[in-house]
Length: 414
RNA sequence: GUGGGCGUAGCUCAGCUGGUAGAGCUCCUGGUUGUGGUCCAGGCGGUCGGGGGUUCGAGUCCCCUCGCUCACCCCA
Image (cartoon, rainbow, N blue to C red; front, top):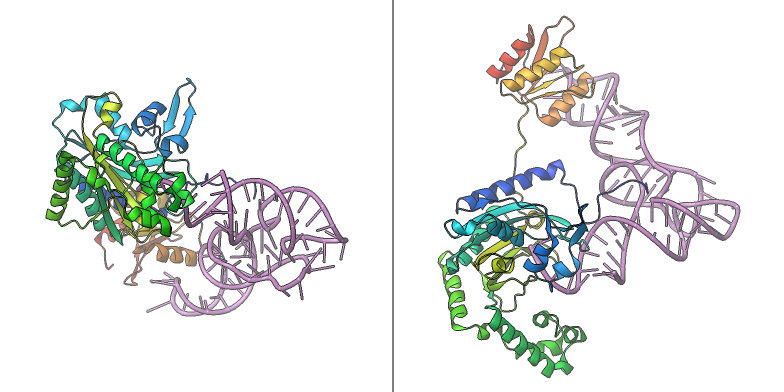
């Protein structure tokens, strides 16, 4: 047992019974996004490490401790992609998409990798659906991004959903706010919990989430980010909210919403589900107007989001899916005649399967019942065929295999 | 990285204060049922996660280790 190899920690096999729900989710995502003009893009599973260092940001958890980084045989440092936005922006620049009509709207679906301890809804390899709109500052782009993800999650049946929205402002106002908040925390450091006090430099916003009584008292009087937005940022944000109202998207403005990536400015959002455990975010995203310039492209605004497929499924977003019907089940032993029969049946458009387990007659019918096959056929000693309709119960004798296919095609009754 | 819970057949689990491994489900076979989903009988399947220790004897006790899982940080 000790030598039995298991899937690496934090990875999982997607088994056949789960495969249908994922396919249905993917199909729905394609419909929702492509009907809004988003086009599919595929980027490599790994990229130069530098892309993520510069794009995602050196100070983020992702870059500091969660990347799967390795050197290839040529000595290049590569990293399994931990998120999708940086790579899509790289592709935008690399292929000169700034010369296309703007904004360029792209979506993607695939596996991503983060070296973290697994827990409910968190894996080292996980799948994301994502969408990015590059080349427009219009608040409508922000609102539409939020609308599309909300629509997808609702359509697909994810339960217990809450949309949280906020604005971080641009870098200047955010830096100003951060300093003001840190200043406030330091002034009242004696009342704070130790945890919060230790995080004043690292992540002061986190203090808003504390349950500690003294900390809560201090936070009640803390400065709020929205008061630090300049006129343009405030205007942008209120337009986003107005558009969400117009589209009937229910949301909650959460001034303390923090995002783990450095590149976000202005609008940020997360969508959570009450169906999940501690990791309750189904998806999230925001505006990243400086990212493309950061990785060497022309200054270009962008807005995007990503949602976790495993989490959507956990939240109940598993659309029903029917197995393809089996029209004909052919008993063994399998010889050239049986083999040709199923091949011909499939060519004629039927769902046909062979008994590949050398089953007894009873076993054949049990298996046919499991598959819910409509017809069962087996060859007699003299080369003629018996064909039974499991639904009606009738059974006929056919002179040869060709006649079996014809009879099944003529179905339903024999 | 840290902490809690858990690791016995493919799956779900039982195994009392240590005595040398069980049940149900699944799968296969035979019988029964109108040649199929019922019922009956049988069969396949485990070096009890791994290593070491205590003991006449360990799935049961002790130590180490690996794995799974939930949670912290952060988020998909």
